[in-house]
Figure 1 (tube, rainbow, N blue to C red):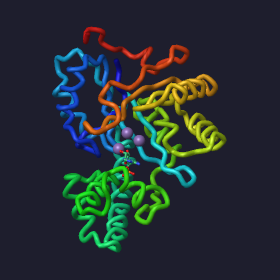
Figure 2 (cartoon, rainbow, N blue to C red; figure 1 turned 180 degrees about the vertical axis):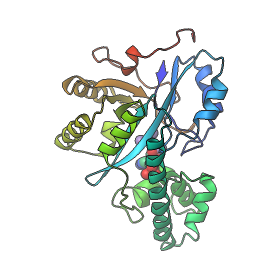
Figure 3 (tube, rainbow, N blue to C red; figure 1 turned 90 degrees about the vertical axis):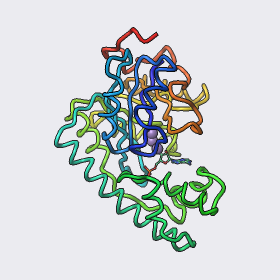
Figure 4 (cartoon, helix red, strand yellow; figure 1 turned 90 degrees about the horizontal axis):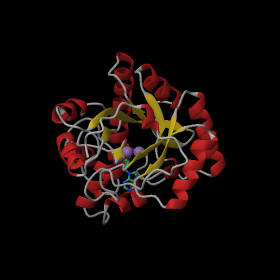
Length: 278
Ligand code: AMP
Ligand code: MN
Ligand code: MN
Ligand code: MN
């Protein structure tokens, strides 16, 4: 199995890159890509841990972009740490921090004191995200669990949702391409788009130079998977697959997402993947 989408402590995941690698080894994965949100800070630890291992590590990232009123995620694979990419990451980091401060202000209005500071403590680094605020809301007993925190407070249109000026799709895709990478549209069904909007998004992504689409993302039913495989064929995009694993409470464990339908072309077909893991 191959897993091209997961998160570590360097963004909103619960495990260190080293712990993720240990999990990947346990499951005999052939290939793993760490795709933290808007950061490549986990690479060094992952590469060191993977030295001498038979698992192929692909340098990945998941960039947040703004498209119309939606937050769209673009994955990048095989990226090199270029100056341009560092600038894009720095921009995202600033936007993320300003947004977090605004989310903090909104949550203070419902009685969560020092919400921003508490979320920063949980994040432990600068890539502070909504999941950290969701955990603060759970800790403060404002909601039962992380998913209800999104439904009640942090999701699109809710009281603590802050529209964010993430980079554009064009900037994300060209940043990934300039860094020698391949851009993939992440989890197309997670945005709540109508089919016509989704097709418009894919067209724009392709025009920008996007090469792939995540046909399998985490827990998906076979109807949705086959629809996404159909989109990969219709729009001539390579197919990708990842668990979007964040923690042991994620719906799907590392590398355990359903398999890719046989009618689409895996993005890793022409990658050099070591075959000795099994
Ligand atoms: P951010 O990048 O700060 O906007 O946070 C986005 C992250 O929040 C996603 O990558 C998911 O990990 C998490 N997330 C988004 N929506 C939900 C939800 N409804 N329930 C649980 N986690 C969510
Ligand atoms: Mn996440
Ligand atoms: Mn995502
Ligand atoms: Mn993700």
